[in-house]
Image (cartoon, rainbow, N blue to C red; front, side, top):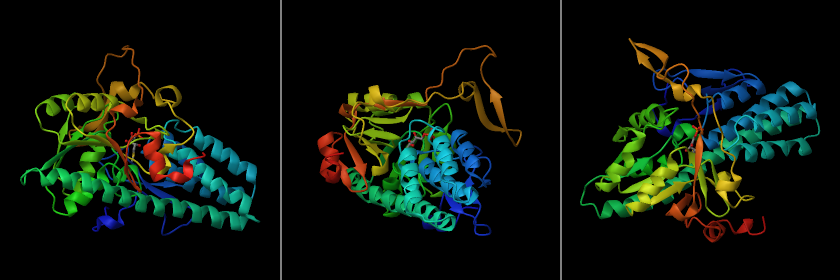
Length: 368
Ligand code: MRU
């Protein structure tokens, strides 16, 4: 069950009964069923990431880190087995760069451990640290993003601030608090009136099935809309601010995020509505510059487009909505060029979506 105190919420943890088992929420089943799923091997971790039991860039990274801990438990000090696990994890989903970041970070334990026991201890410690740090990063994003919402609220004469978001860049996509949702939760906690337009986010419905679920659990007013409604709402003054997450941000500020994000950015630009992207620094790919040319865009199973998951006669079920032979493509992400992004909200502050902007917050990456 969900903890009473939102501070205690976690999307991944070590089982309190067995430290050879990592536990996650099976997000494929939300909002109709809340089921905890056990990961008992690194192979379980690969399946959980690839089949989207867990998803969202930071949580994908954290799951990979815990999977390498499970690999260390099984490998008995055999480094090549752990490196094979790392390779399979890296191939499980291509777009979110946090995956590579987390895998490389845990693999460093291989150099420092002198025996199998120490390797188990160090990989566990590193996975725990990645999760704890992610919560603090989300908190930083929340604090900085809150200033944007507060500034808009100050001009709204007690009317709610309307924020539009796409996909799920919420608590469920991170360890807690989310990226795009952290400023929303913090504003709500401070008593600022806020209302969220939740894009449905076809084909996997992360908006209708995950974002709406967690906003409801935190009592944040929200309304679900179809993906094509955002432009209409913006034309009619019903959106004050757009905040989305990202799976990979280039050094120059281009952002890859769930398919459809680019269209929201175009509509926001046309209507002079601020379009912000919230991200932990673990999502920045300092080695890439041109997002459209360089970021690999995942193509997923066409069945995700032809089928929908829902509830019928009280029973959770999947139904096909198309004719059996309809040709389908399923691009999972798109790239929004930096010129359409008003600013990036990071744990260190808010900056322009540009190389100069990012380097002003992360000067240590100047030479990277
Ligand atoms: O395919 P998903 O559900 O993993 O896509 C998730 C997103 O696109 C999120 O917006 C992104 O990972 C940022 S999560 C803080």
